[in-house]
Amino acid sequence: MKRFVEGVARDQGGLFPAHLEDFVAEDNPVRVVDAYIEALDLRELGFVAVDPSATGRPGYHPSVLLKLYIYGYLNRIASSRRLEREAGRNVELMWLTGRLGPDHKTIANFRKDYGPAIQKVSAQFVELCRQLGLFSRAIIAVDRSKFKAVNSRDNNFTANKVARRIEQAETHIARYLTALERADRQGGDVAEERTPRIREKIESLRRRIEDLKAMEQQLEATPGTQVSLTDPDARAMSTAGKGTDVVGYNVQIAVDTEHHLILAHEVTTTGSDRAQLASMGEAARDASGHTSLTVLADRGYYSRDQVLACEGSGIVPILPKSDTSGGATRGVFTIQDFIYDSEHDRYTSPAGQYLTQAAVRSTRGPDPELVRCRNLDACGACPQKLRCTPYRFKQIKRWKHDGVLDAMQVRLERMPDAMKIRRRTVEHPFGTIKSWMGATHFLTKTLTNVKTETSLQVLAYNLKRMIAIFGVGPLIRAIA
Image (tube, rainbow, N blue to C red; front, side, top):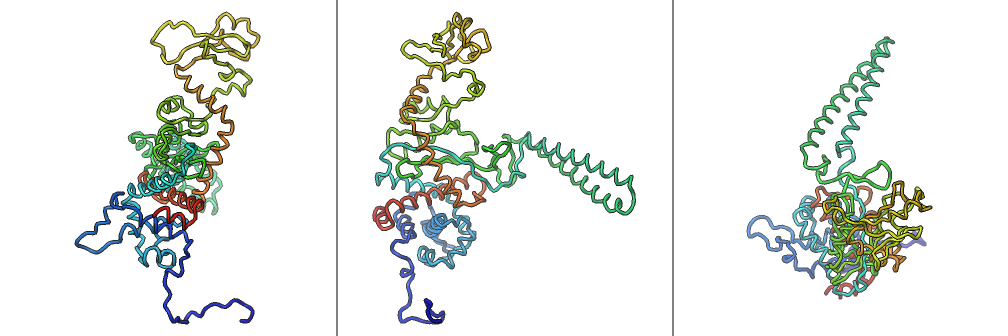
C-alpha cells in the first residue's frame, strides 16, 4: 500500500527481544503509582499478608493488588472482572504487576478484606501532600453529594412507601374487578380470553399486598425507619427535585481552596448535613497540619450547636444562616431586619424602636438558654406592626451563645465571595468522581465496603491533581 504509514507484520521477529520497559514512557502516570506503593510501609498500614504463610499455596503480595486497584480507579476501571481482563491485555498493567494476572475473586476479596488499610493508604497520600507544603492557605471548602448504592428504589421500603404501595395495589385490584364484571356481562370468546388474565393479575396484586404487609411488620421490628433488600446499609435520601430521592450514601469531602486537593472525606447514611460541620472541620484540620483552619460551607450545614462546637477548636466556620421562617417571601420582617447592639444588649426594630431583655418570670421554661427581648409600649402604636407581628407585641428570642453566630456573620460579610470560592472549589471534585464512576456509582455493598471504594476514588483524584501540579518526574522524586 503506497502513500500510507505501514505497520509491522504480525509474524515478524526482532534481533533483540522487546522489554515491557520500552512500552512505558518516562512520563507515564503508571510510574507514579509504582513509586508511591513501593515507598509505603504496608505492614505498618495493616496489610498483614506481606508476611506469607509457611504452608499452602503462595498468594499475591498486597503491593501487586494495591497497584492494580489504584491503576484501575485512575483509569475508570473499578470492576474486579474488568481488572482481571485488563491485567492480561494491558501493557501498562503488565509492567506494573510484573505480568501477574489475579482472578476477579482474588481482586474483589482484597478490597473487601483490607478496607481499613486501603483507607490509610489514601490518608497517607494526603500526608505526603502536607509534607510538600501544599496546604499553606489554611482555607478549605466542605460539601456533600448523594451517591447511588447497589439498591434500586423498588427494593427500599419505608412506612410511607409501604402504605402508598398497598393503596396503589388496592386501587388496581378494584379496577380489575370492575373489568372482570364487565367481561362477565359481555360474554363471548373475548371475555373467555380476558377473564383468566384478569384473575391472574388480581391474584398477583393480592400476593403483593401480603408481601407489603409482611414488610410493614418487618419495619416495625427493625431498629430504624428503612429496610433495603439489596444493600442493607443504603438509605433513601431526598434530593433537590420535589418528590424524588436517591437510595444510597451521603459522601462528605473537605477540599483545599488553593490546589483543590481532598484533605478529608466521610461516608454517612444520614441525608442531612446539619451535624457534619464540626467533624469534617476537625478531620481537615488534622490532615492539613494547621492549628487553625477556615471552613467554607453552604447553608445546609448551618446548625448553631455545630458552629458553637467549632468555637475554640481551631475551626473558623463561614457559612450563611438558614432562614426557614419564610417571612421575607410574605413581605413581613424577619430576625435579620432587627439589628442587635452588643454594647447596650438590645435590638433595634425597623421602626427605630428598642427591644430589650424581658424580665425572667421562671427558670423552668422550655429552653433556659433563650433570652426574650421585647418592647410592650412601642408595639401598640407602631405603624409597621402589621409587617412585624400578628400578636399584641413583637418578641425576639436570642440564644445566649448568639455572639458566636454574630461573629460568623461578620466574617461572612468581610468575605463576600466566600460562597463563590466554596462552589468552584468543592463541587468540581464531586462532578469529576461521579463522571469516573458512571451511572451506577458504587459497586460494593454495605457502609464498610463503600467507605473503602470512596477512599480509592479520593486517592485516584488526588493522584491526578498532584500529577497535574508537579508532573510525573518531579512527583516521583518528591515521593522518594
